[in-house]
Image 1 (cartoon, rainbow, N blue to C red):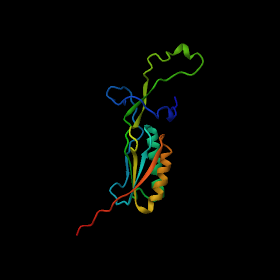
Image 2 (cartoon, rainbow, N blue to C red):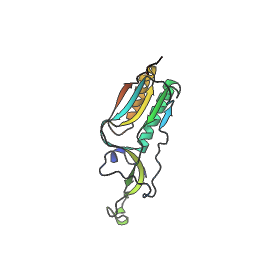
Image 3 (tube, rainbow, N blue to C red):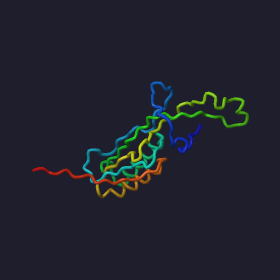
Image 4 (cartoon, helix red, strand yellow):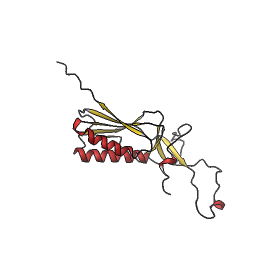
Amino acid sequence: MPLRPGRCYRHFSGPAYTRKEYIPGVPMPKITKFTMGNVNGNYDYELRLVALEKGQIRHNALEAARVLALKQLTNKTGSDQNFALIVLKYPHHVIRENKMMAFAGADRLQDGMRLSFGKPIGTAARIERLGDIIMIAKVKKEHLEIAKKAFEAAASKIPLKTKIDIVPIPKEAVVQ
């Protein structure tokens, strides 16, 4: 069965459904790498992808945004040693779906809303506060525009309104 659109899972109500030890059959999140590039490098700017509204981001949307940003940064900067990309949100919340049949005569085979709790179909990261940071990229000054374009492309994969904050990283004072 194909995935439902992201708008079906964007908003949430109620507590998070996260106790995986009690939930049978939770699929693994698609996103596996959260830190990419050279995290120990000396960088001038930090770009932050910030959420402007509350909601949920499915694991496949997080992975799509990560892959797109990583590919653009790697291809345009020349190497993965010229930046650091960190995904801060982890998909803890288990998403359920009550699968419905959609063909002629399905009403005789299905129970409708009786026992409609649903089966786990994936996971999502919850954005519970405005201004939560989803991803961070650290770059040098010459790669700032490239990183900004990569984050704009990655933001298109995320189902919430976002903005990009650019924060200069202060240089450490040299003590002699």
